Image (cartoon, rainbow, N blue to C red; front, side, top):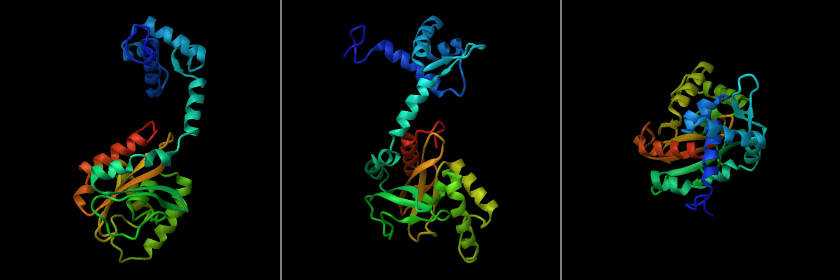
Length: 262
């Protein structure tokens, strides 16, 4: 297939039109004709022709008083249809072997199930890790990197009862070494730190000899549908900005369909 100028695959005019639509999808509010033209580096007359076609198809709507353009009901229907067919687990699992090879660490994929962060995929790294974890393991919400991803980004109604129960249990173990206060205020501070760093991490004092870092796969509501965790033995690997955590964040951001990257 070639464009109307006989060069390259696809239709050049359609590619250009889709650039306009893609730009509008990234904006938080309706845009004027001139704003769209400037952003897409097109004269207003050309942008107007594309927008008129999109309005006719229902993909774009024009606001009456301001004349600004926004995504229309047709765009909503397309988005909902895509979401209905999207499998976060299958999408997130596709590439775990490559992430393990890139980081040299064991990689886990977990979802929220059975009132906890449950491991559903496992890719062993080049350096074996001595652990009893495996498929089906449910990890604690407060004391695991995977659990903390759901603590910070999980659906509040599902997370709250588990959080409160585990908080009570921790308060009954005064000798346990923790990196947060065993209070609601301490948990709130932990969530804020986790979201600010964009990933959760646990040092070897929780799992002797092992370290872990985890990041969320976010949905369109910016909630975690899954968590990807890297597990190893070197504390430097889970530091902010390390090659391993950078690779983890890039992987999860690519797999997310959030409007705000994790």
